[in-house]
Length: 255
Image (cartoon, rainbow, N blue to C red):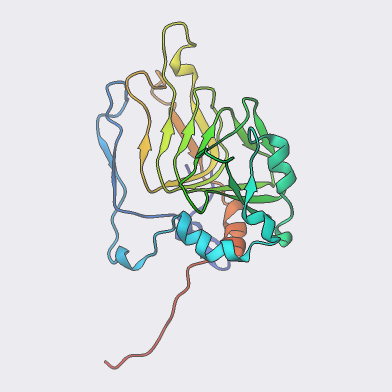
């Protein structure tokens, strides 16, 4: 969703919004038995895509991780749940480069958010979820809301798993693994069509989406999406400044 923004006019540094959109070559099948759509959606394939880098956890950690200061922020162990207070304490103003790597406690490969909703209200936080040994998963157990003017980015080496309580997911999520919706409706639960998932931001996953089986969430209203994410251009400037932009090298060659 473009959120009412104009994709044809300049946005920042003379670029159009459309130039920031991620393209790829993959097909997603939403034609499940409970889906309103009985067709596959195809992401348009562009020529010469092999020239583009794969912006994974490893890429960002190699290029951004070495710039993290203080050194202790490269390995911040999360004891217990990842809470609103923890995230807001780690966040800060962009000029201080609030970038951290969160690692789980020994013998664990999962970081879990608290069972209560999180409202992130600092200017910015970029959080790597990973370790030097294993891929680390992020399990989100309730809503994550990003306040107006704030910006939250997760770069995850494993999967991102969403519990059935999650109905709002703001922020940018760059995921090496899958985005997994653990919603599984069983008799006695609130009707699944009351469990729309929406957010302001973007999700980029290299492992695809696992949106559940026939017990997953869905909407019985033809004009309301089960999953709805609104493009948030506020992230573009911050991501460019802290994570970098694609570089071009021009040279003359013989005709």
